[in-house]
Image 1 (cartoon, one colour):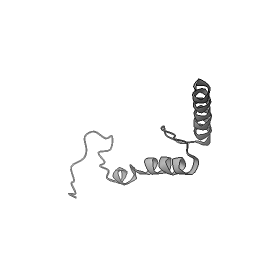
Image 2 (tube, helix red, strand yellow; image 1 turned 30 degrees about the vertical axis):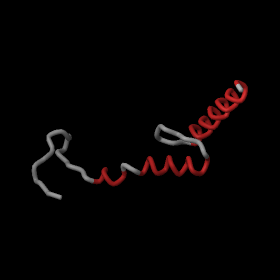
Image 3 (cartoon, helix red, strand yellow; image 1 turned 60 degrees about the vertical axis):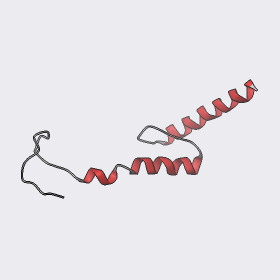
Image 4 (cartoon, rainbow, N blue to C red; image 1 turned 135 degrees about the vertical axis):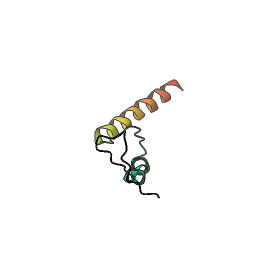
Length: 70
């Protein structure tokens, strides 16, 4: 890592950040934990209870239509 005193011209205060890199995998880890716990995949953040319940309703509808087709 190299420390620099040169301000970043792309940010309003010239700040440079490195903390974001460590949290990029957190959302995916939480989504996978919810999938492992419920069997329901939620693909957009933030993950809320409404989205988990909606995905289960959609999955149930898909499963019912697949059963009717056979």
